[in-house]
Length: 256
Image 1 (cartoon, rainbow, N blue to C red):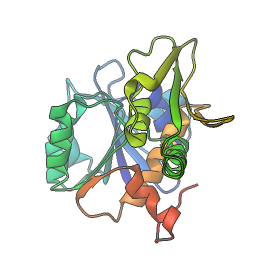
Image 2 (cartoon, rainbow, N blue to C red):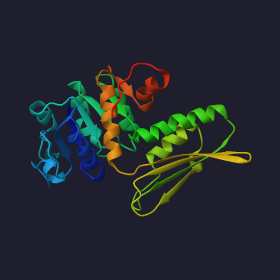
Image 3 (cartoon, rainbow, N blue to C red):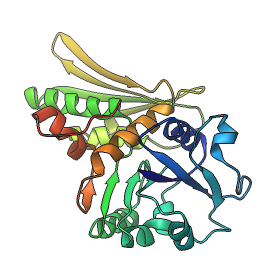
Image 4 (cartoon, rainbow, N blue to C red):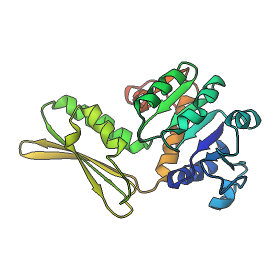
């Protein structure tokens, strides 16, 4: 299955690294904002031997419609920014290309656009595309259901320059129906990402922790989604839709 990747920052490079080493997926091209690496191959930049083209293009020099016609793909994986969906969304959906978005934050306009695109193709969006975080969400929801009156605090830790509260922490708060005031943010050094959910019971606590050791976790998560999205019909999906079959015994595709 052929993949087009948006974004070639730290996360995008890590995702490209994982795709290039996959035998089930082919990285056809990468589309980035600037033209500094135009027409180079990501596999040469990352030092990976692969049969994939992985050619890098710039949004400023390449028309997305022409790119999709000359280099068709089955999936677009988006690690760019919240505005990226406006650049490729409509033309991709019109070609029934499946969209996997790992953007941390979307505004109301972007969410509305995702819903419109989902009327034409399969669209997946998760603020955090790592498997571990989404397993944490399932476990946390189960514990909250067992003890609905428990005190809950969320701690999120990220690299020094990350601004705002993480989208993952916001998703945890939404899932557990707690106020965002219960989110505690730590910014230090080069922490890739750590999320902890603390359940405070009388006389005891339970802590659920997920920590990203490497940004390659985003890549393995994205390919897991692609594997399980490939046979989905049009619609807007999230990680709960992808993981539910694994928890309740329905047919699903695993990815290792």
